[in-house]
Length: 211
Ligand SMILES: [Zn+2]
Image (tube, rainbow, N blue to C red; front, side, top):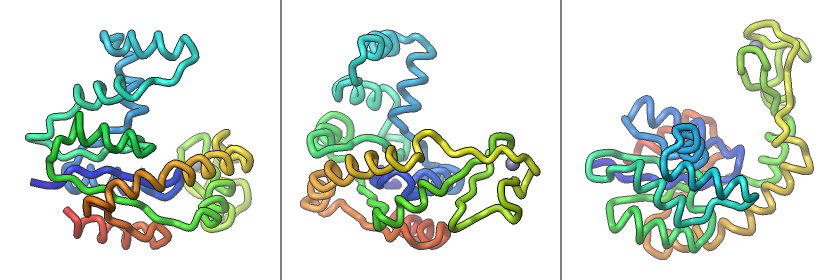
């Protein structure tokens, strides 16, 4: 039985790309709390209605609701999952163990990367508005400035999330909250650190050797 995987990493560390490959090549299922919340809201399930009310009140969705959401969408006896976006702090890590994982075989994978390097990656990221191809002005620039290599569109956009000030804030928050999460898994011998500054293929083969 493949281990349940808890993905940890700063925004832009490449964990999303790795998740996509694990799902495609190794039969994993993705549990993105953001996506699950949107799904429940859209389906207007009982849980979804509660989430809508919380969000309409301008509040953050509380841990118990997220845990309930995860429980509802997992069957750990038969499936292998990637937990992504939860836990974000030490308390949530403990709760996830107690309420959802309950001693099942699981590993936390930390996509470790220098945060200054990450800042550079994120603020230089551009996405083609037409075909979705992703560029980086510093590391993977289009052949002709401002033109998509794939479809020729001149609509290379910067995501609102990737503006310098926002990126800095996201990375600061990440830095503050990740340490206790890492400690939680490390103390139980369940933490694996992967060097996320390596190429995507290299990271993926280290990942595959874990499962
Ligand atoms: Zn394009």
